[in-house]
Length: 435
Image (tube, rainbow, N blue to C red; front, side, top):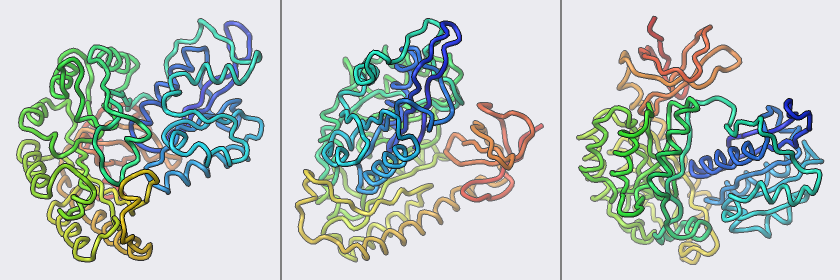
């Protein structure tokens, strides 16, 4: 969950501006859309504050990919109401799109806005707030003010696939892509604000296509027409991996990290999920990535306890993940979503079985992550430093998504620096900055 806090006093006009806090639960696409909303509020005359509890308006950009995400959203809305009883509280995003009646039952939620209303939230806030709403000031730059290390740029939305477990097509709609020229302008703008790392995100980034321009051509244009230092993709599907696309990673500005969703390592489960690839095709995609980008981190998603998943099918999935030795595995116990095909499938897996399978897969994930980090012990790597903890320890990320820690009295924020990996450290590694 990330937070943007906006607004207070306009020094140029002497007028009080109402404050707005924006929270995000969920995916990188949600984060990109929250950044856009933050900019829209800034353009309307708001400026950042740091205390969410003081906000006049609170907006939660929700997620509904699992029941756990739903629960997090409900808990967050209730917590903010308790902390800030006078705020105007708004829920938007995918959970608001799918289950507005559930959110309406939460005491204190004043407005529920689906995904299509996100671009209009400033107007909705001003309409709901009435004549005492926010003042507009030419003194506001319209830029988000805060740590400028990584920016999320939306390039695509929606999905035309019909995966049996997935609610996203129902709450996001069909696939659509943004014009390449618009994306280039946005990336240039983020670079001008000082962002070092730009993540291209969407529901299904690999399906990007606008006016005959596909993802490979979009990446080529961004690399040739902008000064971005690091460029990432949020995720890809196995059929989208091709030699032509992967060859672009010869440019070191493209980060050595591929998130390639697997969901199950059993072909029979993949068929029931209505995924569009086999385990053999998935393995060929991974082999191509490792051949052409040998230092890349390959991460994935796994669903445990999909309806009808037998012990043998789970073992197939576990064994494939063990062989592929992922740098990170995000493990999700299956969560039925009303309206999806999987919600109507027979043979639900008992909660205790899902929990046990998830725990085994998580243990494998931890071992794989540690094994990947060990490969870079004593290696020199480039780290983008992001933030400093209260104990004086800085944290940042390598291009292949390894978290690095170090101690420094200098302000390292948003600096790309060479670091030598000296030891394993918590969920990452400890690095020695070169003097």
